[in-house]
Image (cartoon, rainbow, N blue to C red; front, side, top):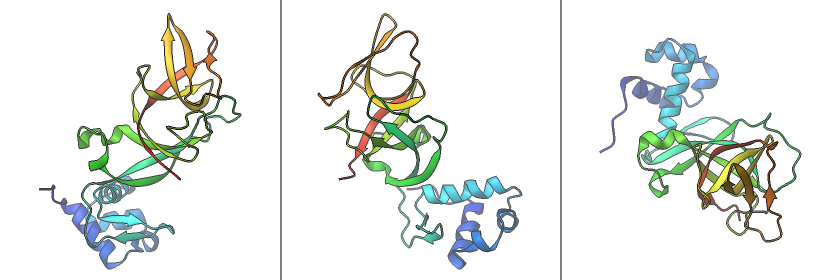
Length: 207
């Protein structure tokens, strides 16, 4: 049996059922006063909790929709930036940030427990170096972790550019491999900077 809503979640849910545009007509502070929260971030947290539990969902206009039948196994994963699957790109990480949230059923995901959900996020692939496993515009579910094996498809930052590659380390020397046979292997020098962000756990095809 799923955990029931707490008092503040219930009050917020009832407000949204009565007026789905309440976040537009009232400030977060005013909403907080009605549900017993005295700071705006607390209201944002409660909204996100209701989203994560499948009670509400934002439409394309940013208006909250109250779901008739809550979907208990839905979690809204953050969509962060673009992970480039090619070797030579000219973008930086300056604009890498959470862009939106992607609803996805957790029962279909390789996640051990609900406590681990915060370690996962989606990114959108660019380029073709990891075909046929990952195509351009595919959604890629990443698990935050700082270590990866040679068999892991790894999201890493190479000299300021996010990429998805196979990573091999030999005596402190890194090599980046692709799946596409037409893409060159990258032998990195000691001057190259590599930071492991996480490993690929699921690919959602855009085709």
